[in-house]
Image (cartoon, rainbow, N blue to C red; front, side, top):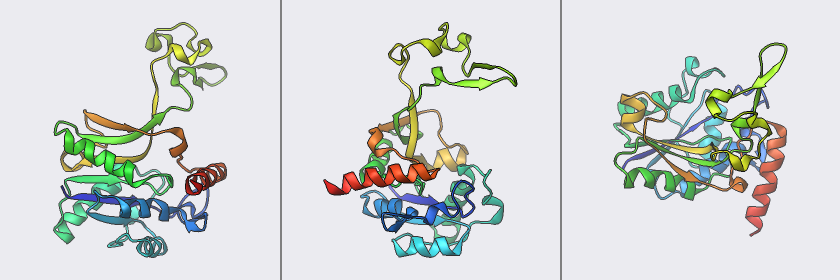
Length: 237
């Protein structure tokens, strides 16, 4: 199969300015997932989709191809991942005569991503022709049955009793709930799922579960500290 890895790294982060190239253990953040993808056995082509020439040069240094600058209309902070992945997949077909069987979403904010995570997601689609996509998941840090929202003045359970089937679910032990999973890291999509069906998941989704010690999605300075500690532990083994 032709597998296209796409590192999506726009420059306009609000939480941490230039987050995607901020140093983490001596390397720009986006370098970690780039190196993992280069070491993968599955990835045929690896590109960066970015609105920044500076980011493009950083990605090239660590082994990705920087073939285009992402259009301005796809670079805002409200643009969903689908838009830049769809653009990248079609650009590669039109300009490189490369139509991927599988497109990988590889976020630079997940520096603990490993080649094994990537290869596992690809293999799930290779082994199951019926699957539309696959992704890495980890146990949710907080069960959704225990979450709250505000109706303006007061709090109310985020999920209603009608939905959960439980009275005061927020007061029950999590062991009483169905397992809740959170996505982090890789998404693998078939060409049909992304381009023809224009979906980021499809209906049949395979998964590869990873431990919490390999699941960090950086959004804050605290996340950088956590990622640094976990990477230090990994590298010391």
